[in-house]
Image 1 (spheres, rainbow, N blue to C red):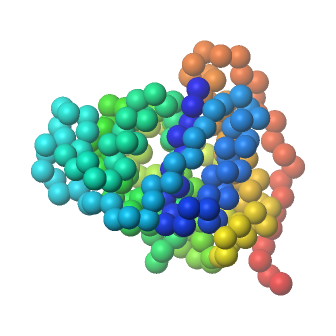
Image 2: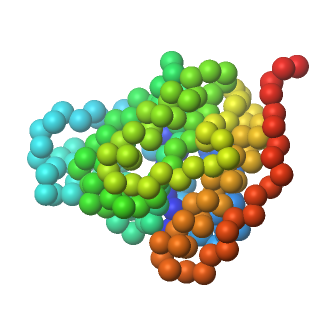
Length: 204
């Protein structure tokens, strides 16, 4: 089984990558393969509602990562998207990619578990998180949760690793994803064993 992890940050190895890497490491510990794909920092087209993708299972535009992701999802069992927070929203590139890939390639996504992760300096993470989940809910995709909303905090690259509660939330998400995938594929699966909760605030 394989989980596709999309890094929707324009920074290849920033805090979004830190959060997704924590998930990837825990998935590996659970016996699940994963791949982190950086969508890059080039423009991603928005949907123009041309409807030419209907029945084709691919978008008419081939100059950005959308069709690559659709193809990879055909052999993947789940997806997790990650994004930094800009003005209380996910990155524009990821929003455009998500909307087009789910509409054009819905057959490759339907019925597969999904989750979202957002990283911010201070505020807006929950609204960005909700925005990323809504398209999955319209594509008949089970939403995988954690012990808290899937958020992490940090500004400079790598700082999110210091958010002990955020990183624990990522590991718990990975455990829940692995458990659900094993159940869906009729494999032996023991209920997840969760770590003692680590609460953290940012008052210094």
